[in-house]
Image (cartoon, rainbow, N blue to C red; front, side):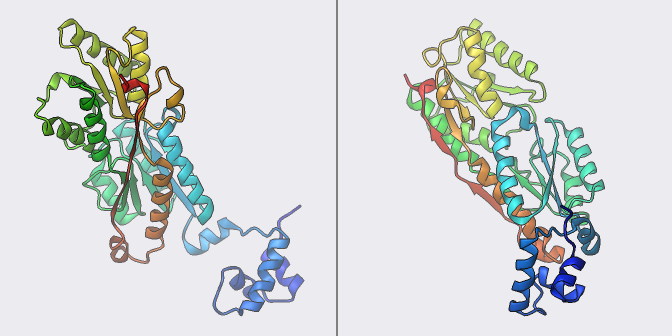
Length: 345
């Protein structure tokens, strides 16, 4: 069945096309009674607005660009996208998803592509806290609003939705110390510097108890390539064991690092948690069924995605940059820690 048009509704109800259009757009010029008659008829006959025509008229495409690192390998990002889609269904916009694959040049290419498509706004999880900062600020000021989520670049002047990762890292490290695991191998991405809040939380927990920070226990991995990631983790563990300074715990700073570390230890036949306890940021829904079950810091990923898109819509609907900047804020959601067998002695 072909979709009915505004003209069809006007003819059926004996109203002008202008009246139908205004009623469907909730114009104050149309009485509540007339608006109800028109909207009820439109719903009963499955009217769908011509979004292309509307976008040309109002100068919007009704589409939102989303740039993530690699949702195929991350349960966390898949959950964030779930929240974004939930919000997009509520506001009625289309989503274009692109992946940077943890690469700064790819991130810029994704931004260029979305701008060329004329998206109304962009949701971005940056490759790092400093990647493409000037360019993103330019886009946010001259082209369309940009909202950051997950990784929060302090150089970008916009709204940001993240988690209190400092507190999450602090609590996880404190848990390892409480079970007398002080030789902690902290594993993170090679694009994160000392100002990263997960690194800061880890170091703060050690400092609180006067535990020296050994740079040899800080491992920075290439997150673009899982083979390189696995090799770096495996080699780091083996080298430290050969030098009689073996770690007795691992803290994984990302979903991928934490879950893969558990598999690497199994491959190396290193007992968890007897020889090395494992904890880290991980949103996998099967953490409890891994062998051993994985202790993890869980992030409210769906809430993050949902709030990020809602905030972006607020910015898009602002008539001027001045009003838009008044909505800039950083929202940090709380993490939760789940202690399981990978750290239970």
